[in-house]
Image 1 (cartoon, rainbow, N blue to C red):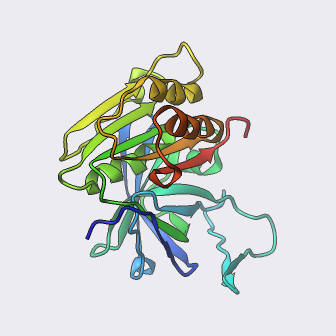
Image 2: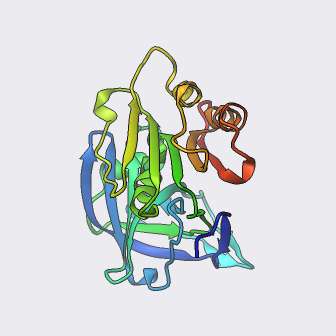
Image 3: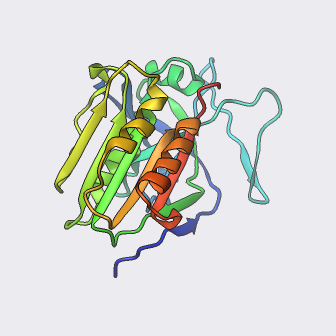
Length: 256
């Protein structure tokens, strides 16, 4: 039966030791990394927006992972290794594989590792901790975000109801950022590549100018935190969507 509210599913905190199984480059800015291992036997990802913490190996190739103590992470003594959150792009329970798509922006420790990762590299994965299962009873879904939201948007397009409409708007930088997105449903897709305004400002301006295909719309958006605050304002004040029909998440901050 369709549900028109967000359902929260909490998962036990787990730390998994996996390894890189395969690497693909779907676009000049993305690295698609397939991680695999028996620790995925009880992995679950019921939401398109599910994300996991990825812990790369250190410079020497050694992997330092935390323990779970009283439902919290306890890190080993010494310098704490970096951990960054990535959307689960695909999960295959039979092959015990999950894919993460890393944006190769060059500034983060995981992005730098991903650019030179190779099959067999050890990797730690934490989570997902909480899954937000999105409603499936709407006639139209608006999906918006910057490049960091593309993996979640791609998963969304694969699970939308068969009779639903989809409006997708993605803020990029140049035409080189544009990649193919497949969707079985009719889709209105707009890539924003105009450099006349800062990248993070594209979405609020474009959303303000667009027209929703239906008043029965659920909106999901993710990206730079300040821009997402403006996105929420536009969805509520310009398009009149109530808060229960909106899920907006800040994935990163432009000043960090």
